[in-house]
Amino acid sequence: MIYDFPRYLAAKKTVDDRALNAHVWQTLRQHLPPQPAILEIGAGIGTMVERLIEQRFITSASYTAIDNQAENIATARQRLTHLPSGIHLTLEAIDLFAFIEREQGQRPYDLLIAHAFLDLMDIPATLPLLFSRLKPGGLFYFSINFDGVTTLEPTIDPILDAQIEQLYHQTMDERLTGGRPSGDSRSGRHLFTHLRQAGAHILAAGGSDWVVFAKPDIHPAGYPADEKYFLQFIVETMHRALAEHPALDNAQFEDWIRQRQAQIEAGELVYIAHQLDFVGRWPGKDFKSLQGNSFIIREKQDF
Image (cartoon, rainbow, N blue to C red; front, side, top):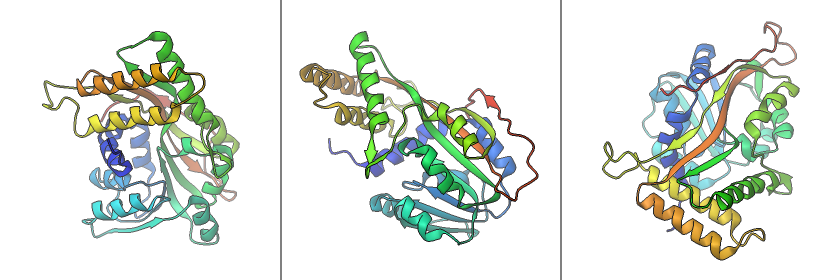
């Protein structure tokens, strides 16, 4: 197959819709000011913009969405053609750090969104830069932060399955982008410490696990929507990350990949990934009204 990243992001939308932590999501709704100025980084093809509008979180807002991949922004422009009249949307293909440097001294934002993005960054180094774009008391919503569990069922070989999972997570921990660390396979749990060290106040946090399985009694194609493609892309991502890895027997690994793709074709593969969502405030040096530094963890609830 020729794998297409914008299509993967589109296929992921229904998976994310189920996964997003309902308590964290509603806490964001409760604290979001009217007519907010919103910045979303790593915005992909605009699925979060769609979600906020579909669920009427925003009916009037200034929304800036950036992504460093021009094809993602081009796809977002095609998808987001019929917005409510009160939504002023700016889409731009630009590197995050170039954007932050350019925007210093400009009007700060009421809400900062990073969806399925922070686990690709050096979080402790990036958070202060991100918070520099929030006004005192501004909100942040950091969703789908990977947290160290990748599960594929049914089991093929318990020892090999565990080894592949461990090595796959290791590639996240060792990833460099532009010479900078850019990954953490346990970014979800580590965000509690990183956010506090950056001076942020966590209002709510909770699990946002991806759970994908076939439902042939409901969906004639097996998996809902385009989630078969989502799974194919995930398995291919693992394939590319670990191809020719010195710790693996290459022939055995290639056979493992073929078996996983065959399970998808048969509607047998179940995929689970553990993640965490956060919403909170950036007090800023002049923001005095917040009470304490407490946080709440709730069980994930589907919408």
